[in-house]
Length: 472
Image 1 (cartoon, rainbow, N blue to C red):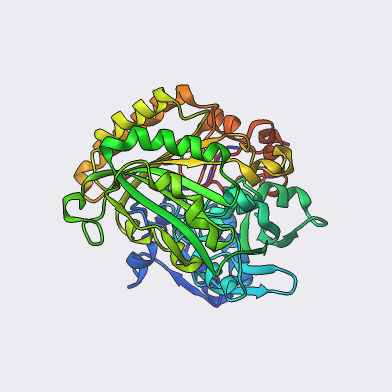
Image 2: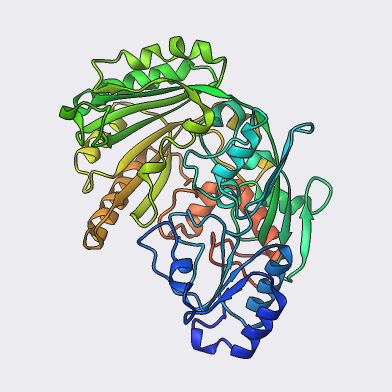
């Protein structure tokens, strides 16, 4: 069904807003309120949207009131968890933003190996509480990322090959649906909704809390972080590919075209210079990690080798400094069939032409536990792709927007001929996915997702996420 809600903030009835304020315990912000400008901003500095109402929710009751308000007043609606999705779909112009950021509670049950996590929690919140018991939810690699968006679109990180996707660990969820009512989605209740939440995105309702299965991790892991001069990139990628073909599932690894940091312990001659980074996490017995990663650390003479054992909590924050709030980000992702000479040549050519030294090209090695879940068991379908290419354009100056966006789109287009199809929706463009890409990414699950959408959100209230159209 077409979205008929008005894109006009002036049409928001002041009396209705005051009624909303009386129904919520959290803060309701309008554009004239003093803190509005700070609250409306999200992590990606390229996103500059102006909602008509922001509801900072303290619990499910506030979320229910906000959903009813948006629906009854026919307003666009967006849901903000961590606000870290690069496409900016957690905020909208003129309409209502349900802001879950005050809801960050995490309660670990170490006896049953589960965690109850609020929808506004960040990865660092989950890691902190779970690691107190030597446990973890397999999540992403930047601690400021919101758990909700990451989980609903899949969730890849340092434990992916060993334990699988974040979404594979969702046991249940409390969800406020388009009718403003709370439902529980688990194996016995609304199982079709739980299936859709495991990788199908946030188009079905507002998840106010998740229950996750926990896994034993740490307290220490062995991290491989070795940087080679970019002249060694092709050799390094070939070595990395061969290494990962037989690597145990306790190894998760990413090869990254990047520029070395402008700081010690990087030697001065390499600070800011283009490099190829072979990064990996060994989550098996920590004393075996050094021997496991030896082939990746002996490709050539490294620019710097920062490898070694470290607390899992430290490893989970290693990449945080490279993704600060307010920087400009435009990313895309695409699955790859293989890393052969043609792919390596293409990546090396584009790496040399990066318009920003902050930009990286990331090659993720997948497989392992991801593929042990059958595609039809959850909405996340692309489980057999051996590699995923992340194209991360990052820059500072607004005048460079078009240059960086064009470079990203060009690399994506050239990579399509090496791809089995599909995108990882935690690394999208600006909601440019289109129906064809959704079908490629969700495969035979797409029609089932449309049926779930039609059942729980027939009027398409939750329209700011993936554009999944309902099917009666």
